[in-house]
Length: 368
Ligand code: IPM
Ligand code: MG
Image (tube, rainbow, N blue to C red; front, side, top):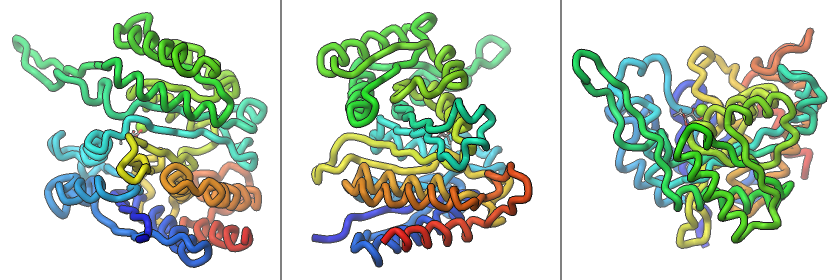
């Protein structure tokens, strides 16, 4: 049988730097664990726009549809701020999500013990935190029609539409309940049913899926604004949070800060199973392209490396090997290694992206 295939899309800003470390980790698994991948690489975002005038070519899109998993770095940057909306770097990422139909976006927020004092919240609030936000990723206000900027009388109107079908809510709810069963068996669904019809439907469908097929999972509902407050007040009350595309975007950035740095958070975007049984999948760090520090070797590669760990777990059924990476990360953090985003303690010199990669590889070696 041929090796499983990976398409690497480093993208813009710090994307290529952090992805360089991921590539070394991938090679390590080929050399040391007999887990070899067929890796190809291509452009996305501003990098693709610079080369081809589009943030994602049809060829790259077709490749993404064929491989077993896509690993993406980050897209965007100030250089592209004035581009037409249709060719902005972000459109490349959104096209991948939409055309691969990656409706279920898993964003874990886990607080590594070594970083508990680094969060802006008190240690007791975040220590041991382990929650997952399941964000609907292919619908809602990100994609709803009508949209645009239109002329009305003598002024312009910006329009976006929040829209959810029952089946879209149903499938993401199922993925949240399935995930909860493998964890703390608890789901909290967040919407704004007090002001939005789409929220009313969201709540009804999530409840119905629960009652019919997942009565064993504990389900609660919260308005998303109250949810944001509870996430900061006592995040450990949650296990799995399921929410729509826009609320998930906001809540996951907030949850990221609970863990100390946005530079720590991986994500998996999953779709329906392919013919080989693996889900369509794209893995990417939650952080962006961080243009302010790009090219300086300062970026934290951990979120991107942990995203590859999620690929091992969710696409390749290698949960133990995923754990091996997570344990290696835990170890280097416990040893005191910090990239610049994690510097808070006095007298700690930051390490470079490459040095953090070196340390994680050394910890992987030590795990054998
Ligand atoms: C994210 C990002 C994206 C989003 C951007 C880059 C399009 O913020 O993945 O959270 O809004 O979904
Ligand atoms: Mg975001």
